[in-house]
Length: 153
Image 1 (cartoon, rainbow, N blue to C red):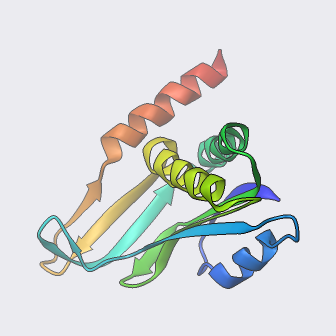
Image 2: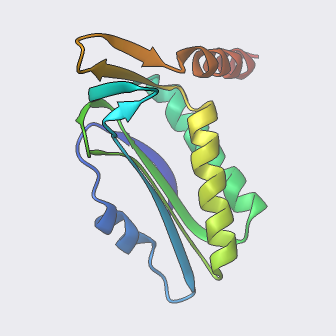
């Protein structure tokens, strides 16, 4: 089971981990991204995630496949939340199982780094001050536009 999903309900990391368990795997690595209360000196009250879902699913699946090609892993999953999230909520979860820990660590790092860079999921921070702002939208929007254009060719 290797996949990328987007969901609007709370992530269940233990359920995800159990789905990756296999008697052929000696290593499992996961990454959890939580909503924090401070970013670049601003106190954060909550976050809001939005996604260009069709492209996000396609690009996320591509990243999982690339990780499987680059590293000898057995399974990998990445799940990202959308909607409104509170401080402490789990926003993204990545899990990788492999025969050995080194491959699992490398693949997990590759997946989260590429998802943050390439997948069209946008984060809006709502601050304690009452202000709000979208974070890193330009980079992801440009990448999403480039991939959509290439897919149309």
